[in-house]
Image (cartoon, rainbow over all chains, first blue to last red; front, side):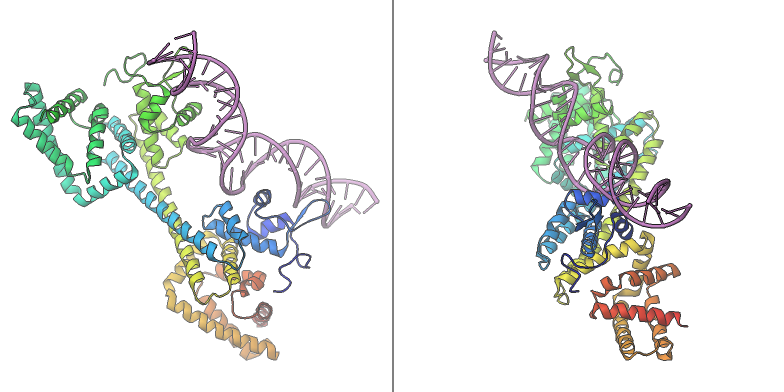
Length: 256
Length: 256
DNA sequence: TCTTGAACCTCCCGCTACGTCAGGTCCTAA
DNA sequence: TTAGGACCTGACGTAGCGGGAGGTTCAAGA
């Protein structure tokens, strides 16, 4: 223990190749660690070849261990620079890393469920049109540009809370409302008509099921107005008719 | 639908800034996509400014959606190059991605438990010496250089199978064996002595609890011989004595 | 002692998916 | 006409090395 640490001590020396072999890293990695000052060979031969001491070996082990835990070389450099008898910064670093890994895991889980959804939509018999899948794909992006991550999470929570049956029921209900609206629009019913106003009320009621605050409602409103053509491609009605219907409903809503 | 795809069609055009704004990416990103040929503006003005069509917009949406699912730009480029009415390659890509995410999640889980172990060892009252923590850290690296990932997984499974109580019991039992061995060594008992031979048998019996095959046993043997000084720093006995004991036990094992 | 092949040295470019200048051109509204 | 914002291309930087070029040094055999 006494002679392990310190300069000028006798003991085994490793060439860079030997150290690489012994520790399972490449020579290039050791070169890199030297370049960034993370691990410098304590000695050099007269001709410039690196000689690593046991002290260096142990430092390398620490570096590699912290690397496998997912820490960056900069973080490792920092925590190994603090005095060795102070584990406070180490504890802090590990705690932070644990939190990061947790967030990462949550993100992965979310992606997995999204991909599973897409895969099932591909295999679903109700998707005969590959182009419709592409539109679904596009909708993911549209959705993400309009909502903040928090809002998306809120909406996802709300959907999970409602359950798949309630969502299917709402879809069916909403399909009926669309048909009703299209009929009124074709018939030229004025937007002030009580029938149309009642339709708006029921329409919004269905939509409100999915919201938790006013914010997401207005965002959806905007998204619909700006992307109705796009969104309506996933629906069983012609895009132009849906665009028209959206404008018609907007008028009716403002006519109150 | 008819006039959406095709060149020379009328329709809205976006400048690169407008497209960036609308889709929530940066101008630099669009430049990058152009550079690598992933998304090129369908038109240019006479002076060279990019003009994006609705077709380009929809392609951008697809690209961004696939990016959020964690696919690389190269993979996206590949799958968007296949004919649009062929979802087979898309299905394959998503399935592969799902598998990758699963592996990633498993890895994260493993790291989390490792970090939790280290954190508890820091907070543990039985770790008054910060240097001992560093040695523990080094051992992670030593462990990983000696065992393949499969072997590590096997050993971890085995430990989980045994449960924490059995492991604690084995530790205590082993501590007794070490004391016994040190006494024999100090007393100069010859390695052929039945008492020592019996000790070796019991010693190996405890060790074998943790192994599933012959492979890991011989690896541990090698690891012990090459790193006994290092390993023994985590043990409550002086390093030199442990190094000596390892050599003594090795002799006894070969003396049969 | 000489030789030769392996090991070592120092640059330097490459990878992902962009961020961020720099220096110059273009567009648009006042 | 002019100002200032938007746009252009080109180039360097990021993290953690991989891999190669071109030159020097080491170690073992003849």
